[in-house]
Image (tube, rainbow, N blue to C red; front, side, top):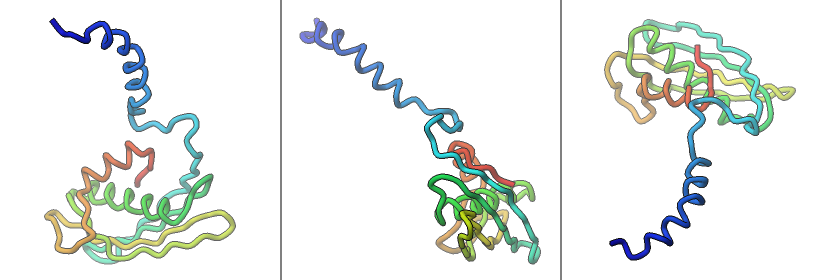
Length: 137
């Protein structure tokens, strides 16, 4: 016999309601999430495995971090499209003008994990971007 079973049973509805509030949205932004206008990605191949991504976005709560994340998502998807599994960040320049944030980022793409500290696994990153509602290429 469980000594505190009546007490646990009495708490169960509240616990279940609390857990329901933690349910993920399945990659969809909630109604009260900030509205971000992702204005597109421009991709330019600089060399065989060196790619530049120019992104633009605006909206409530958008900043340089959001612009950097948008470029990272584009790089990850592009690596997958080209049949590569990894990318390495080279540099990102971010600026804001008239409420529009822009990032100009350069990444290398490769089939194997490249050396360096700022590497990304394309498949994992694309999944994370989808979960966060950030579009890619």
